[in-house]
Length: 376
Image (tube, rainbow, N blue to C red; front, side):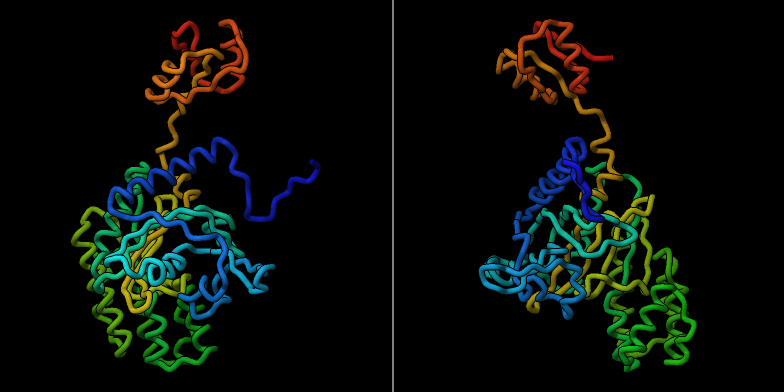
């Protein structure tokens, strides 16, 4: 085959990488199931009307579209499994008692990548709690994230809290036009208030205070309290301070930052949103509050590819051993119980041939006369 070029942002996961990704994936799902989360597997494609029902604007979904040849309706390929969990929770699982706890794992596709993740295909893993009281399960979700990272042997990370509802509060208080809204978004993304006085001097003063509060949560929450705020912005800020202060109290050893100005890409979060970053600034998990059919929900998700880059879980050498063709089945099982991956020869070999074949197959060990030999 002459041309093996793949589209930008897509790749083959070859054996070693695929094995490690599966290890991260299965480790996460097992942990969630031990904590009472039910595993669900939504379809890769859905009709647009159901796939994007959480979003106000379908064009913001970052999803590939295809025409269903059977129904002649447009379908979307999921770019985020969270919205599918929302649909299932108020549909097929609506009768289950609340809180409903579900976890998931599956492939997602995105039209556009970003600077933090260049891949357009990824395996998303996550957990959601559906049907809770307001500000009720942040502690549990963050505990699960921390436990997940520890099991994956990711030691150094920090949590960044944001305010996804701040923009809507600003729109209400300052009656922003569409062009003014885009300008405010641009200024917030760049952490720069220049030009906001043309909309409102009060908005610029508030923005300056918010910009100054970006950083360490324990220090900068105090700065948020000192800003003179308008009605709707004040409500959102006070709620943000209340939640974040509680997290700081419950997790005193966790490095927590705040960035009230960060624009939420999901377009469905309410209350608070958060992201967990590694010390190398790789995004590990993201999540937050949202609503589904008037039910309060909270959840988090991540991509196995990003977690794998930071995880030491799969960094140790795999114990792969080459075994003779006619190895006893019980001996083979015992080797596997001891953590060996057994690779069986396809023909009868002497000791030198077994050793040579072990080197060829990139094994760390080989078996001959029921004795394990380690390759040096």
